[in-house]
Length: 199
Image (cartoon, rainbow, N blue to C red; front, side, top):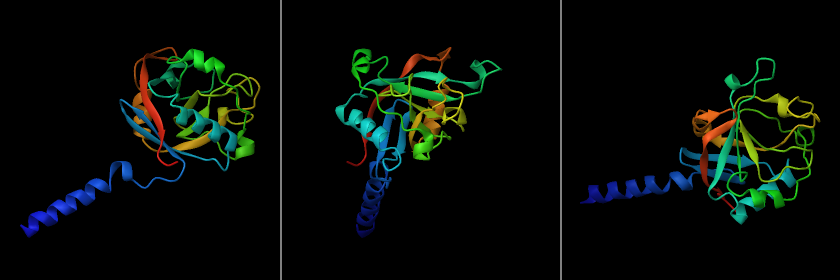
């Protein structure tokens, strides 16, 4: 009986010391998908406006049942261009009307933040310099073209990196490998939700 009781206690200790109780850094978010979960550490000290805005979107529930809808794969890009690999998500498909109403975030360049587009970096998608809002992408491999002075955008200002995947790059890569046509996932990949692990 004593052995069975000790075994039960050990099992309960193991259960509660794993999963959601894992010791992640402060400012960690969890992107929940059908392929598994992606854990991203955000850097509010380095990119304060970008992180504050992204957290406000998360807290509003805007990403519930949203999508990863865009993908860049090296084999689908012209040989004359830089090779970029990433997955992009947000509410472009799930709630385009709400997307159009979002106010743009002032661009925090990689020079200002000291952050660069490396493997696992999360960054805001944009068109013009201060147009980024809810849409984001995750880099696969080093992507210097998205830094200030890079060639990914005609204005050369780069994109606002604001965090990095700390667990779940295998999930990012699995999503990246899903069927696509051109630069669109077919079908889009469901993002069940994005949540903060600590508030």
